[in-house]
Amino acid sequence: MDYYTSIYYTFSTIAQVLAGFIALSGVFILFKIQDLRKIQLIQAQQFYCYMSGSGLTESSFHRCPNIAVNLKTLRLAESTSGMLDEINNILNDDQVKKIHQYKSLLKWKTIIEKIESVKNTVKVLTIISIILGVLTIIYSLIILSLTPMISKSFSTIIKSIGIYYAALSIIIMVCSILMSFKETKIFERK
Image (cartoon, helix red, strand yellow):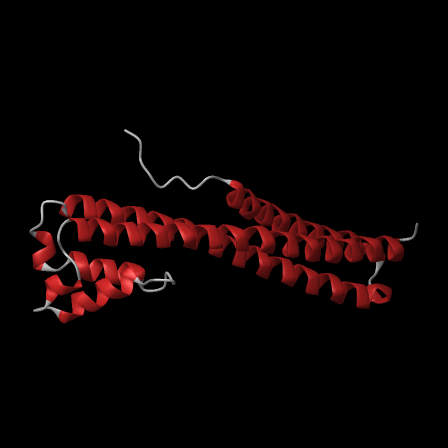
């Protein structure tokens, strides 16, 4: 097999494998993020129920309509965007700080923050792997189009660079896929 053929097969394989891995990791990560979002919504609604059990509802904050709006939004939440800001506004209210369940409410906030942290880590890892994978695919396609112009002495270097970035992309994608299978531990055991 001449070196033109080896370059062609190497880089066409790299492009195909990375495209498949990007699609596969996207599916797993999407399900993980949806799962984390559901857990976060459930925790926020439990936070609201716990506050209601303490006797604090929207009507308790007639002097502070901002908190009442935040509580109502939190109770009706179907989205997780801005949820932590709403919870922080509620917990920073002087009336809420006086209730004896305040420490428990802070624990709910910590749980929701942990979920958000896991969600952000998964997102960042996925974005990095996809960007690196797409750049490697573009590199592979450029090399494929330039194959006849590549000299024999540069073919090993060019293949090594392509294989290195492909391997790095696949390792990061595998890590993000494994994170999607990992159970999210949000409760501390003592």
